[in-house]
Length: 117
Length: 114
Image 1 (cartoon, rainbow over the protein chains, first blue to last red):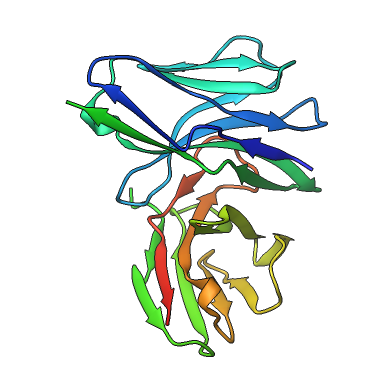
Image 2 (tube, rainbow over the protein chains, first blue to last red; image 1 turned 90 degrees about the horizontal axis):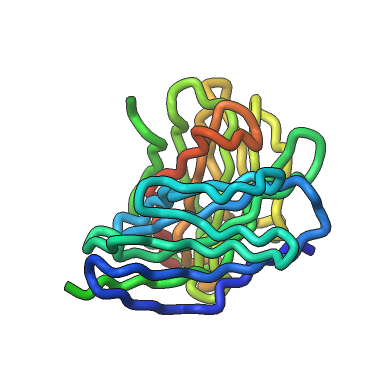
């Protein structure tokens, strides 16, 4: 069964500093997608970054980047130059195929990130 | 362009009652998925609908059901509510199932069962 583990329930970072959130996953598939989502108090899940497993190059979106280690099944998120608006719950997610043309996301338990002014 | 709209935003129900939640996808999106979010279990997949057909269902009891209309709007229903059904219910839409780009979540319906 596919599982996603986020080992850090809470983390904090000073404004303008860098923080790394950890995620490991378990899968027997070779082709899959991984995501980091942000959930602020508004509750909407907002996509931060995605990674295709077949791409060895780590994804980057502005201040957000990932360290994707396929063999180790590790997918960490690095936030550079942290801003107050980055404070939120962060969820790591794995997309798996569940049937012909059918997919679902499996999420980790989340990491609550606080940004200290 | 309007996002994914979930109504109502908050809901309080009594044990044993039933409830219906609504999700209107982004215009043009035909796939809708539902997730339940609780502090204990986290985010869990409920259903996926595409072209008015349920394509996939998560590990939830039969009290949880859903449907999708011809305009792609989706509803989910929970019958005989239990205290443990208190949760944030999120839906997400995309053009087609499993689409990687454009998969967008709504802001959820917070259901409290008392």
